[in-house]
Image (cartoon, rainbow, N blue to C red; front, side):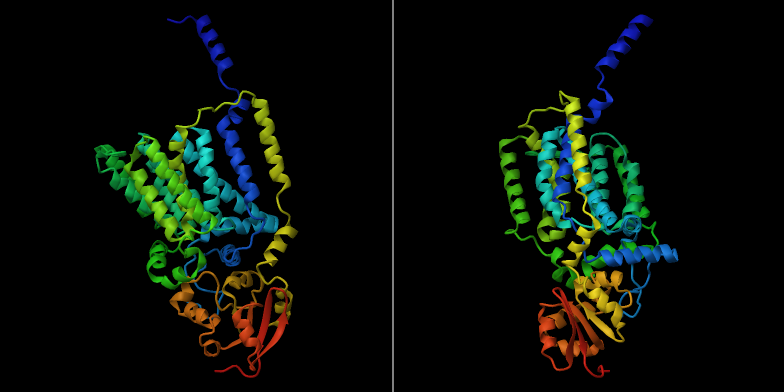
Length: 500
């Protein structure tokens, strides 16, 4: 039996050899994670321009004022105040709170915090996969470019943040650590943040089904769950599905992603972020390079893929190639899988020899980011480059007494900045497609029956980009006159009585 003196000596020796707080804070993985955060900070755009932001802020203001979510379309005149679901209602509140307390800088800070959290989540997934910080950092570099498709004040970012802990939970379950009890509350939160919860549910079901197989096919391996694991995972899956109904809209919110997939074909075929990946773009070239690297690494390495990992990677690849919007999803599902390949070629080194040097690096990084936070003037100027800021003064004086046709991308901005104008259309798209408004809008801006569509909706004013075919056409149409014009926009008014 160990004497008390020997026990004290062993405790003192252990205390001396145990890394101190500074060493733990400045360990190599933390330093690389901070370097990644610094890199993301400087490539993140200095703007809050996003077509959805205006109606997101207005929805949040409505919720706080009426203590209920928006249930009808209160922003446009073309849909007749019909029922509408705000499927991102919870994700809108942080942006609105940030605007209330810190203005446009607050919105920018929330946006970059979401992006930083998502990229650090990819780093965490890669480090969990490879246990090599250098490999985890390297795979995050292409992930930055792929994820840049969603840089900005986007509610979608909350969905990707929810996806990361789900993947961590599933990977740990595969390795014998059960935390599946966290999945139901995660999905209860996720369904109120964004419709991307459906992707998380698909991955959960795929994970469950992959665990029903046993075998090895070349470098692909499947391990079947034992009876206890199957029961736990099945129970977590069922409870997660039940948790989806903990929301203010009930089954309608759960059904929304399916409506998007099957009943909004015009939305998906017309909106840029739903278009297939352009392989001539920088992001397309990165994807091609990643696929080539994956083939090469698999040829020179001997890594065995778990069957569910391969399924997840294929889902990410298909999603990113089919819809540019999902390149961030592809980065989350694919990039961490590269880290284990790359780790075999890199030395393992996790502890800096000089923790004070690491502390200095961290301090400088934090100071650099704090000094480079954009000011309100810079953010407002960037926003004015994309939206009709100068036109707002004129519109406030105009007090239009008729319906207004607006640019699709400006709808959200007008909802927030010019609430006296009920818009023709905005970037919500869903309700406008269901009512045929989106189709009419596309015909009008393509000069396909434009005048008859303007008559149909009794349009008296047009607020549009000054270089668009529509505005050039109306400027040379006798029934229309130019009321206002600047470097960004024009305001046109119909002369005489609007057709009934």
